Length: 366
Image (cartoon, rainbow, N blue to C red; front, side):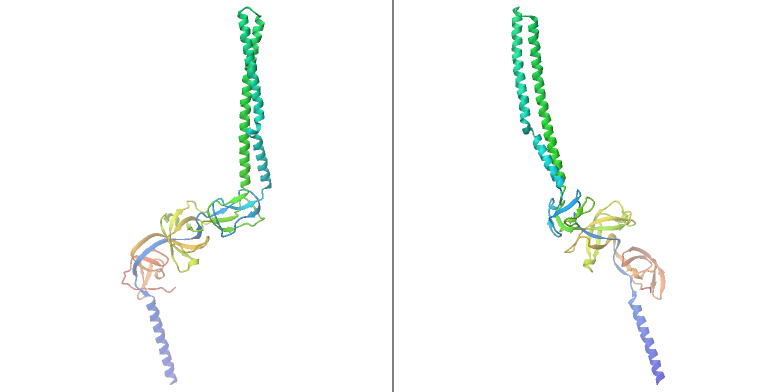
């Protein structure tokens, strides 16, 4: 009786093992299927706000005031921070005083003085001209001496020279005052520009995504103080390996997966290819625009992308897990046959020859 139980248990175990084996065989036994397949280039990257940029200070200094906080919406030229600028403020004041002193209107007395000299020289010229003409008339009547005539003529010419010289001095002073006034105004503009550099302003309209400095901290022109970008429009910045970049073209479709939206697939399109390679990472930056963006995005979210290089419709395909050594498959009876492959993606591979849609293939044991 005990022997029969043992034989029954053995038969039961063998039957169960046979059922499991048949069941597993059935699970891994498939036909090739006809469907669309695409070849793509893998890329990883991040989400960036459109017009996103790092804000830098043009000068070195301590942060005196911060006018914004993270999440605020700003416009172009909105003041973000103010740096200490005591020396700059004094320079502006000095430049303003110099400009006021150099104005032509502030030097009217000097011009009036020369005008008076011109009027006096002109009166002297008229007087000497009349005396010379009178002496010539007397000389024509044989009255007076030649010496007197020559003295009157010399006096006239001296007066004429003095009159012309006075006018030249007036024009020279006028030009000099005008030049000084313009130079002083330019110096004032320069001082104001330097002082304005101590006010850090936004270059774009958008959202303040990150403040990198606090009040009282030292800033320089090499470290960013904030990150600002568009609050509604986002783009993708992808890194493509140098071995794949020659196959990427502007306008190609991209399939996007994001950890923030697991299980969802988004579409984008290649908008720009940066033509220089990053020597450290051996990759190129490719920018893309969303076709179907998610409802909510933030800068620096990570993405994985497949840039679609080409697509083929009604291709004979098998799962890549059924392909052995990139060139063989297992048919019924564990027979290994060679196949010719075509397009591949991360799940499927196109079979060009070696199989038909009616053939069965087995999943190899790994």
